[in-house]
Image (tube, rainbow, N blue to C red):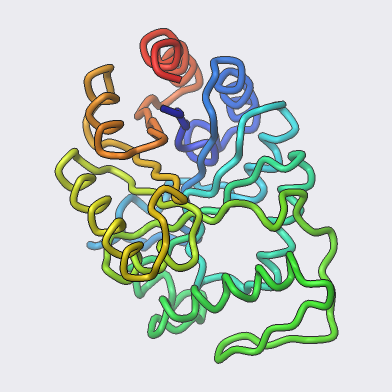
Length: 281
């Protein structure tokens, strides 16, 4: 079992000194990866279904991971997740390739679709066809990352006669992980992804979603064994929870602490190293 740490771009890690200390501690403790979350904007005032108050800070994922890269040596750096249809894919391809380069090839690209129309509207991005747009954006980014003469022509993005350097160090490109729990998300994972990330899931929902991903792989002629499954459990994680999720086919548990200060997060990292990583990693 691998262990990730969620929230390297959120309070208290929105503070640079705290982010650096937490990143170093997680790297030294044997965590496999650091994960960001994303909301470019939040509803003000908070109204359902907005998930949190408007004053919650989210440092941009690429900025946060590039900063963490400078304070670590081994640990992987994951966007968990970037809401892909809200981004310009050509610009995002440049940003993520740059993170992979400055980190020495440690990036994991986690993408999702999002579900909040207000956030889309504030960015001037259509809420309709967001799933189709995301899939096309993945294709466009892969073209920029892998083709000698990048070219892509789709419904939502089109280019030729261009290059975007640097390219990622990882070949052919950094791993692509999808979030989401719809049949479309599972199909997208099976067809286009290297893995799947589920956040805040209990054991039953995890089992159901993994089964759905297996079925999607069968439909699309993909081996489920080619995918890496990462989950942030809803309940506190102990040794028994790790065993239960491993039995379901989970490869990585992405741990999340509600600690509100640097000291609390560092205590959490030390406890995880002692009680989980030393036993299972």
